[in-house]
Amino acid sequence: MKTLVISAPRTKSGPPGYRGFANTLQLQVGQEYALFWTKNMRGQLSSGMRVVVIDKPSRQQAEVTLVGWTLQPMQPTYNRVEHYDVVMQGLTVVPFNGGSIRLNRRGLAII
Image (cartoon, rainbow, N blue to C red; front, side, top):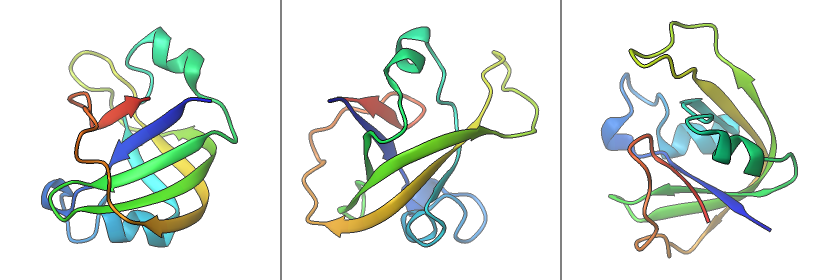
């Protein structure tokens, strides 16, 4: 089964706590990811799949189960990419081993 990887680094998280690793763990929501950047990714996502949340700079990692995703009511980006919250449950912090995972420019990967 495929695994969705999302980056939640505190160094690029905007206002204090927003979209950072600790906030993602607490809320069990990855905030405002451009999930459907290709039809290929859309077809690979399913509720119940494994999700890995990583913060490469601080070498933190958690594993969780994908519950779903929610479209955020905001303006799409300049190239009309809509943003979604990734809703998760059962976050467990695990030893970091995500250093070799290559993320796209939106901080996502499916492996």
